[in-house]
Length: 118
Image (cartoon, rainbow, N blue to C red; front, side):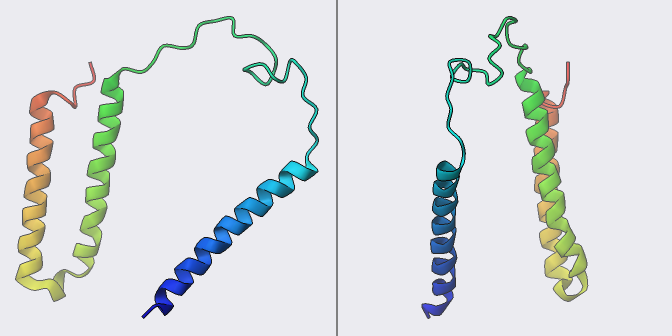
């Protein structure tokens, strides 16, 4: 029973060991010549003259998150479509329930104005 977990444990140990060895190897091999210009916040040594660019409005992030959510939910429909015949009526009903919940969420977001760009 533990043989299945042995592979996962071996991969975890290998990843930790390899990451540690590569970081240590990089620290030993790379040149380290700090100068006052390199220790400044910007690697080029040029101080920040202009203020940072304005931030995007939160509306942009909301629309982007909604797109990702609905895109991922659309991906969940592909396995259902592939195995539509073996699932029969049960698969059809569950897909209709899933799409109904998805449509209800879309209508709710539309009603709240989350999809309005202005």
